[in-house]
Length: 152
Image (cartoon, rainbow, N blue to C red; front, side, top):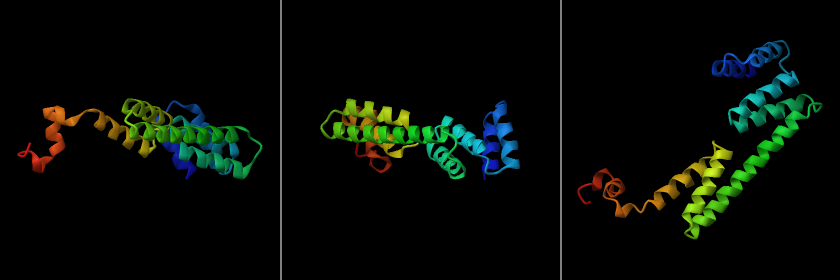
């Protein structure tokens, strides 16, 4: 599985020499901690935090002699917690009618954790709510949907 991920990393950036080195190392020693940790780093750089975390955990299952996987897991968990907190605060802002502030929190959450569906959905909903759809004829048509165009 790791070899497949290294090949995907090479497809993303064929000039990244470290990936070739790690692929060779991993082919010779599949449980090499540095190769596993490097895969985690690649996925962390791509904002694929859950995949990165799985490789850091795999590294720590093989050895605890490398500090980077511990540090990187802590960063991932801290970012996840920060994004969750921002979404929760955004939800509170939205509930009390402070949509602009909710949007700001959702944007920050998306920047921290781009793969968080709740942050994206709440951001979209807040943008929709802030448009005052009934006052704009073009958007009013969109609100009616295809079956209700004649009614608008």
